[in-house]
Length: 173
Image (cartoon, rainbow, N blue to C red; front, side, top):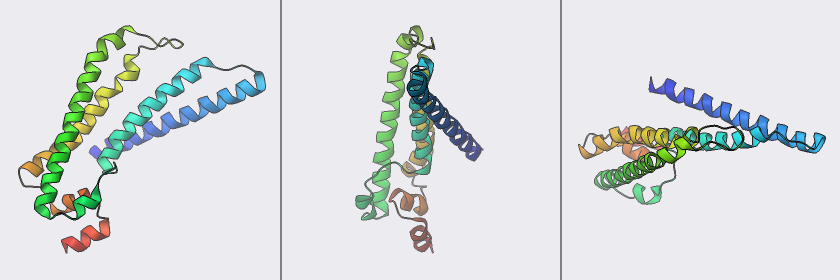
């Protein structure tokens, strides 16, 4: 099921990017050809970009493609990697908590504000913080639990260390 959820998120990201391209390109054409623009498209393209970025952060988290210091992690043995993955995941969970709490603290303000052109409730823009914090935490918590209980696999540790698929296969054989 998780695979389908992330495929759907990728489709949403493509739709947001396509919408941005159409709105921005259309506005450029309108400005140069007709000396006029569509103000709604300026505002919506910014909001699409915000959502694209934060949805993309969750998708990239699932793929393990966020930046890391794998040069250090690769030099560690199994015990060192477990300690580093626990510290990393604890820090990520702390950041997710802060991000969720910050979005929650701003929710009252955002619920009463509307966008200047579209009249869109600003919670639709800034509420993406709830999705991102919850999505990343949902991805990290299972690995964190496996790491602190000692049930994390060598393959997961190799992926955490940035070792490629062929290196993981060689190491597991």
